[in-house]
Amino acid sequence: MIKVEGIHKSFGKVHAVRGVSFDAPDGKITGLLGPNGAGKSTTLRVLYTVLKPDQGSASIDGADVVTDALEARKRIGALPHGAGLYPHLTARENIAYFARLCGLAKAEIDDRVDEIIRLLEIGDFADRRTKGFSQGQRTKVSLARALVHDPQNILLDEPSNGLDVMATRSLRELILKLKDDGRCVLFSSHVMQEVAALCDDICIIANGQVAIDDSVAGIRERTGCEDLEEAFVRAILMVEAE
Image (cartoon, rainbow, N blue to C red):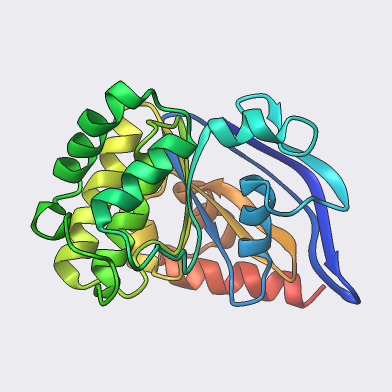
């Protein structure tokens, strides 16, 4: 479970996150939505332990992301936006390297890497160097790195960005499987169709603040909009009018 409580983060004069709070429980898919510059990626980077909040707190399964950052990292699998791969390593080598970084025993790494390659259907290019991979291939390998240590909490920053229809469909099926396995899945997206198809709960952020945080049905009821895209726009406008 992920808990975020009143976090603030500024970069110079830019106040990127202003008191954001929400919970992302196990066994559910929580969407983090908002227009460009709303503070979504900054919030996720705090949860990755890449950034420290100026105020507030966040925890992963009870491990504080600031005071117990190493323990928090052990409990997450992260797919940051634009995550890079080592171009001169094969896909398999990239995944195995991250398995070692995550502390998997040497004796189990090969079997675990083979398992994740099968799960994500990347066997056709697993032994090619990642230099020159398509966007979809890079995303699948980056996702494999995030899942290789079997984390309870999965954080995905716009995971379907640049994927074709078939790759996007495969990704959605995987996200739903993670939910069915009882994992906590938190992801950001701009694709309303994706959000409507996947999310149990949604936290909409605008101007660094939470505009609305509720179930999909709750957001429709509170905004008076049956269409989720229209509900999203209305929630954003409500914050911007304040």
